[in-house]
Amino acid sequence: MEAVELQIKNSILKLLKGIDPEVDVYFEEMPHTDREHGAQISRTWYFVDIVPGKNQTVDGIYTDKAVLIDIAYHAERESNMAYLLKAAEIDMAIRPVLRFGDRKITIPDADIAVTDRVLHYVFRVSFRHSLESADSHEPMGELDVRIKKESE
Picture: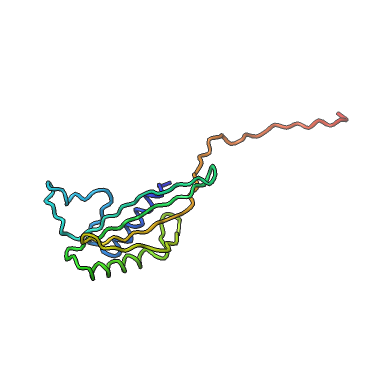
């Protein structure tokens, strides 16, 4: 089974591409901001940061997990009004329920801020996760049972 963080990543990628199919979405690094790649910082892009949070053991099988997601959006025209409109678009795509894997998680709130000409849409996902145990034992074979009556 695919890791939960990867399921979240794939779900967010699909949602953002549904909003802006032509805009690049980055998760780990942005190669176009490196000097050897031409430093094209003024382009429009998304950068998604997925930060695993507190994992709390419930028992031997279940763990309560929390994940912080920061969707950064930079528009080529750097307009505060455009950022507010984009925040509303992202909010409509993500809330009230985020779907990833076979889960549907309610997102009660999100923080929206514009810092250094970049929109940040930040929310948290909290859920209970169960460990899948692989069956390491061979199935039981047939038993040969004989019943002896007292009269025999």
